Structures are given as structure tokens and as C-alpha cells.
Length: 377
Image 1 (tube, rainbow, N blue to C red):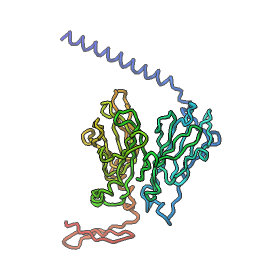
Image 2 (image 1 turned 45 degrees about the horizontal axis):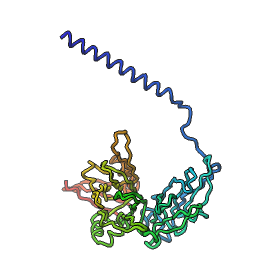
Image 3 (image 1 turned 90 degrees about the vertical axis):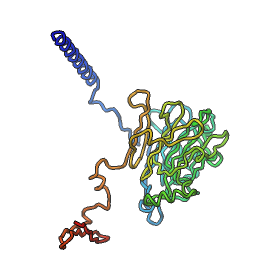
Image 4 (image 1 turned 120 degrees about the vertical axis):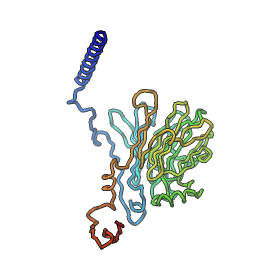
């Protein structure tokens, strides 16, 4: 018993010492940070030269409004890349209704708008996202713009701007067979088959928004409708790209808002994660190492987002495993989910409960209808 008490007391002392050391370490770390200094400094547009604004104007005379086009306020993207190989990072801003902008970094956080001379608005309609890749493998970064919006398929082809190495670009999407006509939100270039060249996956929204789930999936069973509303996959075949979506196992209904590529299972082959809005679950396409992918999200996760927005994958805790961060638009509690619904506006409703003998009734009235509900109590 005496030995047990001695050992216990020793462990207690050791624990106190470790706790004291941890506290002192934490205190020293905190003291090393000067909390009076700002971590970031706001650079005004007057100094930076960046004046881009993704201004939206609703038009009730067309479908460019929220009631006729569900994705009207989904926003656009921005990209950072060195387009002229001078070692400085340049900025590309994507515009929905407004033109895209390319700002050349002049150093000291000052930028020059070279959009007009660069030719990065040729074929531009409603742009959503931008991706950079050396598509023609000449050592200069090219620009791929994902387009969508309230346009017909012919007016929303994705755009590929090949770098001419003099701050000018040539639109060449058709030449490379990358003029995808879906409601594209973003695209990623990556080597899916480890053959040394860049392939391309395009995340698309769905043309058939606004349908109830039963009608939606019945509509998706029709081949042509599914083709228009799926992720699309393009394999690099040398001087051009070939669409192999179905062959690769990616032909599936989507409301794609976010896409990222990473080696999720650490097998040396890149996989694809897509966040889907509405009633289509997120997709985790695991690379089968044979030119195909399989959606294994139900095997790899215990839950997924309800209304997936953005997504990113990184090793958050330095354990050499890839962690997944998804933005979910769904409210975190029942009360907030109901109060955010326009149809649940309490000012538009009145309620009367009465006993009419055998049953209780609730009379619910709104600006549109009055209903008599028998509670059968």
C-alpha cells in the first residue's frame, strides 16, 4: 500500500509539472503575439487599381431574375496566377452580367487592367468560374472560364483562352473540344490516369431546377436530360480533348456548386469531390485506376451536407490524411430552417382553433388561400 501511495504521488507531481510547463508555454506563445497590430491591411482600389464589381441587375422582361432563374445570385469567381511568367501573381475576376477583368501585377500591390488588350472577353456571356492550366504544355498558363447563367446552350459555351505569351490570349475552346454547354460553375484540370497530361472535369448545375424530387428524378431517367445536367469529363487525347463522361462513370444528375480534386484515399490516384445543392447528395468519385470512377460517398462518410455549396480538401491536422470541408446552406436548427422559409412568414397567416362538437378544426388563412384542417381528435 505504501508503494502504491508513493507511485501515485509521483505521478501527481509529474502531472503538475507537465501542466505548469504547458501553461507557461501557452503564455509565452500568447505573449509573443502583439494583439495591437493588425494581421491584414486594407488596400484601397485607388492604390491597387482594382475596381472590379460583379454588379447584377434583374430584368423582369427576360429570365435574368431570381424568379425565372434560380441561380441568379450564385455569384462568380476569382483566380490568382502568373500569366506572364514574371514571378508576380496576377488576378482574374469573373463577371456574370459584367465583363471579366484581368489585372496585371506591377509589384507593390499595384495592378493594371489589361482586359481589353488581353482579349479575355471574346465569346463571353454569363461567366461563373475560372481555372488556370497549361493546356498546350508550352510553359505558359492558359485560362479556362466556366459559363452558365440564364442562357440557351449555344450562348453558354465554356471558354478556353490560350496564352500568346505577350499578355494576349486566343479563345480556342472549340479547337480543343472544351466548349461545354452545361450551366457550368467551375472546372478542374488534373491528371486522372497518371499519363502525364492534364484532363478536365466540369461541374454543372441542373437545367431542371424547380421540379419536385419525384418529377426531377423521373426526368433524369431520360438520357438526353441527364446528359445536359451532369458533371462532364474530358480526357486529354494529345492535341484535343474527348468527352468520356459516361465511360468514366460520372454521368449522374447533379446540382454542382463546388468541385475539388484530391487523393482522398492516399493511393496515388486523384479523386473528385462535388458538392450538390437541393436534393442530390454530394458525390465522392474515387478513382478506380482503370479510367473510371465510382461514387463511394456512402462508404467513406457517415453524413453529407443537405445543400452543398463550396468545398475544399486539405490535411488540416498534419496526419497525412486528407480532410474535407464543405459549406452547407441548410440551417443548423429546426427553428431557423422554418423562419428562413418565405412561406412561413407569420404576418401572412392567422389561425383560429375551435371545437365543432366531435372534431377540432384549425382554420389557416394566408393572402393566397384559406384552408380548413380536420385534426381528427
